[in-house]
Length: 279
Image 1: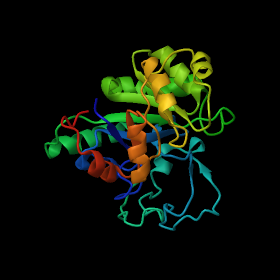
Image 2: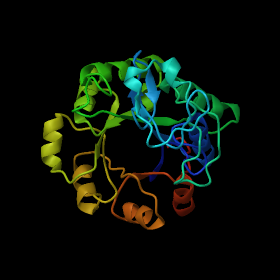
Image 3: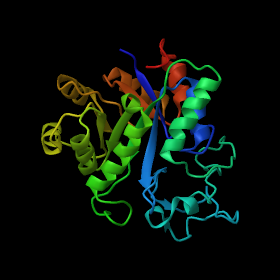
Image 4: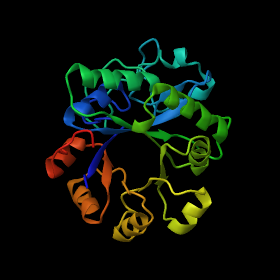
């Protein structure tokens, strides 16, 4: 079985996260699964962004003034997408000193689908990109950062189904409510649960109400016992965010099915490119 290398928010060593350039660079490196984050605008557009607000040192306002962490948060659920798109989010992040400065707004998910697929086709890259969509949702933020889980799930699935890419989509979240609502609407899609704290797996799956295709724990939680339990339930395990050589090797040794990493280029140097780039 192929050990899957997922690019976390794109190829973050090279370009700012969750940008078209970062996803296209990941494809160029040989990645065929990109992980990306989804939030919602006031006009119910699905926007690719890790945070549901605009702030921080790697963004600038419509006048070109860099935002600072001390600036007040601008909640995107209170903003029309056209206003969100006026902010430049292409400034390098200090944690990734080799990132290139680019001009980039927060893209729509539909734009990511079309642009990344077009980028791959234009240079004849083999295989097709799979999009692992993390729905950013919090049980105590309904109506503040995002709509209710049923409406949120419906918005995402409507776009996914309209894209014609359903067989290349995975949907995951830390908020199991929205995963369950999406599954109720379309149980044929691929689903995953994200875990950041120790969980009783049997109880977790019973609470969710169905067995997803993936359970993806934080790297510190992943071990052989978890992998074996999940595999016995026909569930794959792809830990996050696995960035060091030592952790990458340990995850493969413990039986993980792949990793989500900021450094896919390092992972490929350890494990090689898959023979079939579509995997």
